[in-house]
Image (cartoon, rainbow, N blue to C red; front, side, top):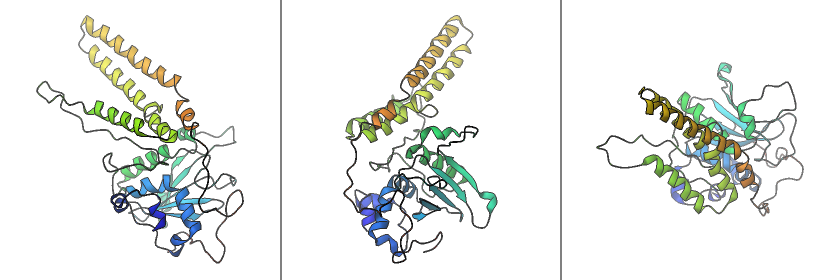
Length: 306
């Protein structure tokens, strides 16, 4: 099917994805164009075994994700006020979980939408704007907590599409005893990240890899800072003079890493801005700042309809 052929490089990848929606719009050019524009959201979720669909919300297109417990996710831009940005590329994302029979399960999983209200409390993810990777990671984390991920993501089974931002997973801790084989699994993970950076030809993909290192809350530099702080506390436990000296040296290393992250806080956006402007050659959507629902000749299914 054309909608999958454009976003799956080979048959093995297609076989690993959750199936496409089962309705007649799947074979229409306008729906396939919408599907392509949201591939950076739908593909990583389908890799986790979650079925996705594209629907029209109050004023913009949304991604609807079916969950194993009968609830669903709604992922899209803010619906009010309407935005003039193209589908799949909003200024921010809002992801909510809803259940048709249990309103108590309703929750906001993610909200990076900008706000014009100076008195509004900003959520931490507001810093990420329309970036897809933090959105997917937050959904991944919450659904894992709820036990609603049919297929947990794996670094060996996933090959990110060019529009998706890749994610790294923590390797299984190695045995670091004196008798263990000298394997450096954490160094190997960073080496794999470097190899992927060397292989990419897209500034957008390079920015996604940079984000893995420079994210201020979960990036590699921040985690390394935590590591050195923990090592500093461990050194101080010895209560020897050199233990205290080593404690301060390691604390300085942690501060240096965090300072480096602060100095490079704009590097991800600057790298992403190096990407050349796209030239659209695919099927055009209906004209206008934000395409509306299809006409009566090509009806858009309501939520839950098949």
